[in-house]
Amino acid sequence: MHSIPLSYALAYPPHLYLFTKFIKASNYAYTNMVPRANLERLGPSLPRETADMLWRARGCHMNALEGFPLFAAAMLAGTYTNISPRELNICAAEYLAARVVYSVLYMTVRSEPASYLRSAVYFYSVGIPFYVLWKAGWKVAAANERDKDKI
Image (tube, rainbow, N blue to C red; front, side, top):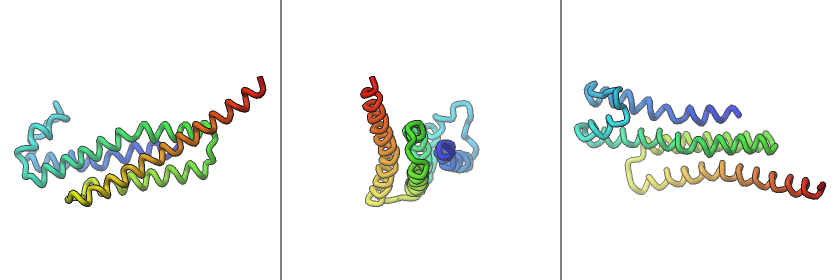
């Protein structure tokens, strides 16, 4: 269960990088009034390399938030269906490690071929909660079969 808030927290280092780098790069033209429009509004005035890095930081942040519900649901389903704590902990640790690797790659990869490594890590990380949900689903189905036999 502790991995759920950790997973959510992994979304914020790229966001903090984006925020601090963007304020400085835009010469403090960043506004908190419409914060989600800043990159679209001010990005074209920044050096291309800086703007690209800020877009990657934003994408990394958004991707972590988008993946969070699937992971949280998997951990809750695994706990509810009594998947062994050892197996759940291994899955959670693998997921968190994969998300850290993914974030580092997202923020640092600068070539098209290397970007496919980032995609491979992404698909690996998404497979982990799918595995847990699949396993939890089989446990629920088996329990339903046992209960049906009692009726």
